[in-house]
Length: 571
Image 1 (cartoon, rainbow, N blue to C red):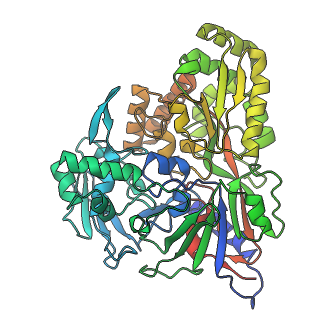
Image 2 (cartoon, rainbow, N blue to C red; image 1 turned 135 degrees about the vertical axis):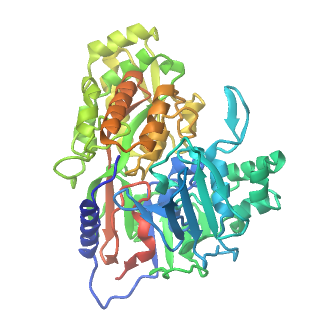
């Protein structure tokens, strides 16, 4: 998941722009004042840095509501957002990055953006504040991951200032530093401080005030949770071109132009987000949707007549995340299951994207968890996957016998409704039955990946970071973090010290030979330990209504709504 060439990046955006131009519609028509956006993320938390926010796909919903120094672009790359501020590495004995928030930056509630927001993000994501837990110290903040943030020694910030200097630990280096303090994850510290009754969040975090930090953590973990119809909007100010007006199951998430936004005014004043939990087919039939971004085959009988439709491979990995306790407490049991999963057949029937390139992403079953198919490293590191290409009943039966698990029942959970994932489970059940494994469909409308941690299911069927919809990026932070010991996104509770060390070194060393050796070791380790089973690059249906201008497909964690403030619909 290393950098692409500049030429390829420009070509990708140009191709996306061309696709949008094809549906631009006729001049002289009237602009529609509101655009519906159907996306198979779940609206569960405003806080994209929390486990709940990251695993539900909040970045695909709130990227233009909560801005950051960078955002995930349409091909998965990190793009600087100079409206929010600027960030640059500066010389120093330790890695140092200077951040300067836009002097005009102000939240929709009138409070200026400040470096306090960076201090809170670092404190919450670094893992440095802990409490006693069953397996030793546990983080106070339920962060999705600590990648990069754990390497930061300090954030120099005068409360209320627009400037911050981030200094990394002398023994650490974090190459993908542009994945820090990003859109959807830079939260309003003044709200956390007010609700938690902490006079100065920066001072409390810098001095280590235990009571204040506990209250801040309680709010950071839970205070930005979102439930239909009951939002206290004072807790949800915006730092982007849109702000939240309302949220209900009936009327969707209504975003309206943020009157205090200091950048270019949104082209359309109202966007209504329809998440995975709604009947997308009915909304499309009612002409309530102008943009669709959902998993291919996930919505049964989806009729997109009147749309320009593309099916493209996403940066997210369709995969089975396995528990490491219960029926999968033995590595032999996990291997037995992987040996009977019909990965090639699943790809052939359900994983192909019609508009995939001739080579690379989306052209075959995915044989890696942390390296993407269009990476130069991919062919060299994925050899161990070959024995798991298709169903091998004798090998699965032998591995199951070695595990001592008898004839186990495997419950596969996923968020319903999802026609494609229901078919995946059915195909796995049929393939694994001769090997002595009974597979049950445990999909549910209220499913969350935390049910794997709680032992209510044995596997999660989802995309990268156990997200139901848009997922993945070129930097691949969520993918690597989801298998790290203690990571919030590690729902299967896999732990391997060598894997953790490898990912640390990959983030610090860009030597190609070193990278190749580390990735090879990592994939060998993961195919041996089997914490998850990758299936294929998640195919995405991305559709723009006729007359929609400036739509550019974003099959990544940022979703196609990454530039929703530029959308124009004329009819």
